[in-house]
Image 1 (cartoon, rainbow, N blue to C red):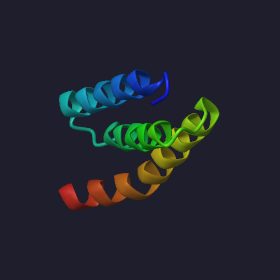
Image 2: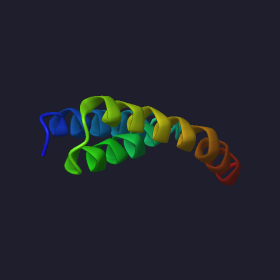
Image 3: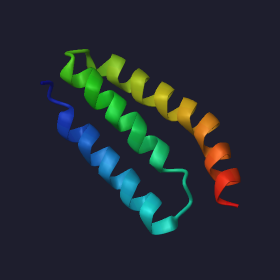
Amino acid sequence: MGDYLILWVIIGVIALAIDIATSAFIFIWFTVGAVAAIIANVLGYQISAQVITFVFVSALFTGVGYPLAKNTIK
């Protein structure tokens, strides 16, 4: 496992805690991105690929998941 595993765990936990505290359903997608980055880390990818994975997955899930969650909760 790479050196950045703890970084991604911390980012995921902080994003989850913020989302629980605010109930905004925005930060949960950053937790999903952190999980994807953890998977990339475990697979041995470099930090640049991990960051790209985190940004891409977070943006994708925010763009698709947030509107769905927002409409479902209303």
